[in-house]
Length: 259
Figure (cartoon, rainbow, N blue to C red):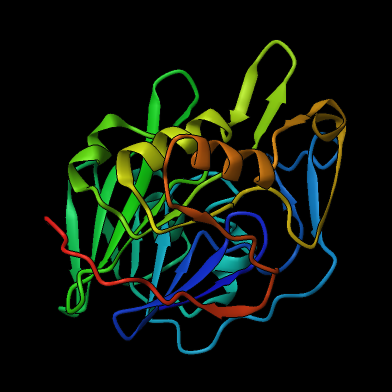
């Protein structure tokens, strides 16, 4: 299993002989609602479009997960697995194969990788977007991805999970609270899923963020705190900090999976 962190929420995951691109933001700025004065992210190091992508997976319809400029440049014949809101984005852009997954639904890609949608991030007052569990059908190895640290108790039934990709810090807004949950949320996910490895996501990378919202953000927590909490709770999970843009291999232990 190989992974490449492409800054922010974006990952290239090589699992089950497939190359899966998750929540890609690779070109152009990241802006919400055409309001750069409010929030704007720009990559300091360009990230080339990965070659030979087999599948795109989108967790949310917001720009930092379904980035329109990036999606316009990707091959629109690549199959896309998406939450209902993200599916609308790629359908409007002309993608030819869009698989919409509601919570609890699965998609078997080429009898190689199973993609399962689970409840993910609360976006707005009522909309709950998708998290995902990716499973290598041949080996049983699993990855859980949730980009905001909103972990539903429903994921407990799929434990153990080998790899968890989720925030490990809190990103707070005054009067709003955490818009990204790490810290205690990461520990909770580790207690439920008993992962071998946790990989932080959502926080930065080689990116410059500007705008009013950025000036109001308050960051809480770090990798060392989470690793200490895991040890205090007798969890053998290892927290790794990948370097943006660098492909790395995860050598996972063999263990008996119940699913």
